[in-house]
Image (cartoon, rainbow, N blue to C red; front, side, top):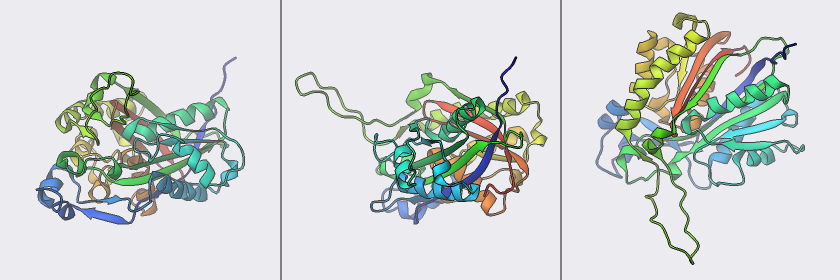
Length: 336
């Protein structure tokens, strides 16, 4: 006798962005650069950043509310919350616990964070699929939220031009109609390349023992190394994800990639032979929002009608670790 895996439904998606816009021209007040220099190298024109007391928890809460509303699910029906973030305002309590409190959920359900950087949403979705597939939980809230603007070094032109803040959320449930919205999903990592992107949370040793040399503050990235690594791996990886699912590139309606660099997105697009209409990009306006990047791109493109529902899409991303992952998903009517 074999155990049948319970199918998963993507019931609703939502996103949230700060109101404050920082353009490339604004950045010329901080260091020597230009709109043309940044745009030609990254595809970014502007990014959103938090201001005042606003943080990743606020953005994640707003995105979660929208996803729950579109899924037509009351917060008290949620049985598990998973938050993906690499730029939380605090190491603990977990963002997921803050979301639990903000939503006013009365039940003492599990809530935890994961750190897979910009691959966070794919990792969270993979975990949720396993939980729902086993029958352990029926309704799960996923939140991907980051406020990178608090963690970059604003004197470092090479990294600070790239990042923006934002949040995306997804509600996944047991699919009562028996149709699994996750056609295929895969996650990977290679710690041998961990030094390509780093962010330290340094403290100090006990004053009674030998101290250590503190690392530089802010996000540190070997831009050329990251591009070389991802450009070599990601196009083939996405192609294999589709093939291993028994599909062809032409069977996929949309590519919704992590918005890190327009050149990397174009490399995957060219490998699959996709037209611009099939590839979702919003990096021009939001920059790299880390874990939030994929769900923001998904929710916004559906909301604006750029992605039609009743279709299939490849979600793919990569991040510090190095981590990467991809999912082929069905986009049902009503998710946004």
